[in-house]
Image (cartoon, rainbow, N blue to C red):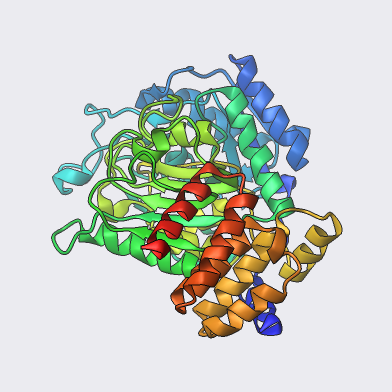
Length: 471
């Protein structure tokens, strides 16, 4: 059993490439705001970004800028500066990523006076020209081709399976920002990313559906359900909630590695509580048309609160995107977890439309599954890291997802030296014992997990399991 589980872990993560390098990145900051420059310098130090790759422009400090401001004060000066530094000139580039920092505007407002050929003939829903700043900047390699500003531009690397092909040479600059309710929180995004690359991204996945049986929005439920299947098969304990409302306050969401759900306009339920148990490196996504419209507000919409509560990476929309033009969530999580893409690579491989509404918040170089599993296990063991328990749990879950019998998983957990001192492994052992009808042994495992746990949410969940067994 042990050998089978380890091999499964290797298979799941063996496609990972080497971590991204700072030389691949240009960093953009607002030169009017010292805090913006400080975020850029913090990122450059941690990711070894060359000094020549840091670009400051005098920009508005607001969330939203006009189309004219975007063109004359941001897009054109940035393109000129990138070309001057031999970083990006059309599709000729030495970089693949652009990182706007806290203080750089987020949204380009609509301009009804801007008339372009073909706009009047387009469907009314695609005559709009408001957009995410980042989605517009992602098209800098196509700038010389005078792309239109209304509607969408098809992403030429959508569904790309080869991460190396996601580059300016193929028409896309990957743009993801270090942003949030404050400059200090923006800095923490890269701190958390590097910590997770060192120790691994571990924890549980929570998928919050609406329980839709039909109708035009069922596609949203279907997408998120597939995300849950990806996380489950990848070895993460996955909780799928099908109730129409969002996960309520008091829901036992402990050790959150992944969250994907919908559909509230402002943060609510378990994510509005004072403490959210995000794990280092956690990725959170709440599907709503305006989830990214107020990134620097700590309490409104979803992205700002996610960053404040401890998420490492998230994404969303700054204006109405329409459901079918939001990033393909199953494709994003598949590329990230199963194919070992960076956050930026996974995001753009899953994005159908450019010059549209999507914004990615987090370090684009963040690669949570960028280390060979056995090398990571050996490193965790050498450092006596508490994260080693999660490695064993992932292996057990992967084996079960691949068809290994529960009896073998129980035997494997019982012989692991780490199980005795691990709340997570004891809880998993209790789950399996309960599933196989061994109630008394399951109660003992849950009781041991309660004594070991430092998580209030986990203790809450364990208490519910104990009560269920006793009934």
